[in-house]
Length: 309
Image (cartoon, rainbow, N blue to C red):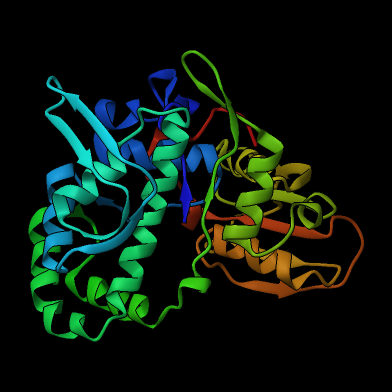
């Protein structure tokens, strides 16, 4: 579980530099996904949108969630319709109380503390799902989720994820927050640490391994700029791109070619590109060759530059 501070400085496609939380106001889930993909360099396949009251109803459908509130919390924001009044101690929070806890940020920790509390509540929810009582509550929980969220997950996918979550141990869930330095307006990310976190959490390899692997990208799609776009995305993740050129002929399927026996990196690349096939062809030159084909053509034409490669 990776949290992105809401004031993180980034570039929102078609809108320019801003806080990352401005992406939703500018273009809803689609632009938010696009912005996160551009920032992290990894694909986002699914999303769930939750408003404060929606999240509260889901927690209530679970019968509440047990959280250790670390201190008394009191705050009122009439404009935002936010009323926080919580007492210190471990307790079963209702949906409204859980949202109060997750939204509180009026202490020395500011937004970083709020992110930490959000992660704490989600871990508590994961633990709650494992309880035997949830077997009886699962129909009510699924109904609440479907009624009070906006998502591109199907009902069958939601059920599958619920079963998966019920089998997880809390120790299996890893959390992180993108590291950065908070200024008066923005949070400026530490790019090197971000690449390390993303490589380990989403690719399963170290950033050092990525940096030591020479990758070439060949454009066999017939679409100008697609190989360059792909290379830039991989560079943001920490891959070492040594060459971007046009392929000798067009291809229908994007392929990852491992030339020097680095299967873990080749598989990570293939997954990033949409679970493309991997072949092993010993030879000289780059460690890995990516042949970008027509199946990688971006759905959003704004993504493709006019670079000839």
